[in-house]
Length: 126
Image 1 (cartoon, rainbow, N blue to C red):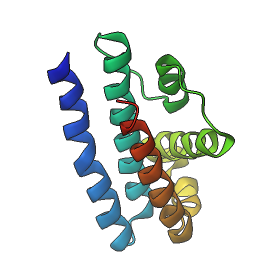
Image 2: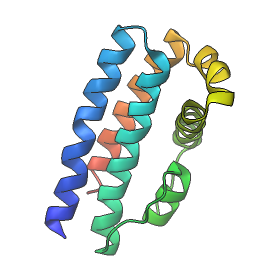
Image 3: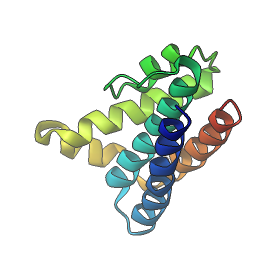
Image 4: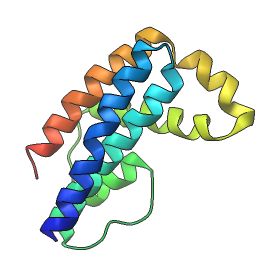
C-alpha cells in the first residue's frame, strides 16, 4: 500500500500549485476546484494508510475525513464544507454563475491558506 499512499500524495501536490496559479490569474472558481482536489487526494492518502485498502470513489471531504477517523476543529469542518460546496457548484452549469460570484478573490486567498495548512496537518498524520 505504500505505493498507493505515495501515488495520492504525488498527485495532490500539483493541485495546490495549480490553485495558486489560477488564483493569481483571477480564476477563483477553478482555483477552489483544485484546492478541493488537493485536500481530497491527501485525505485519500491518509485513508490508505489507515485502512490499507483502496479509498472509495467519493469526493465528499467530510465523509472522507470521517472515514479517516479525524477529529476536526470547527474551522477545519468549515473549510471542508466550503471546498465541497465550491467543488460541486463548479461542475454544473445551472449553479456555476452563483459559484463564481461566491469564489471572490479574498475567499480564494483565505481558502488557499487554510487548505495548505490543513494539508500540512493531514500529512503529519500520514
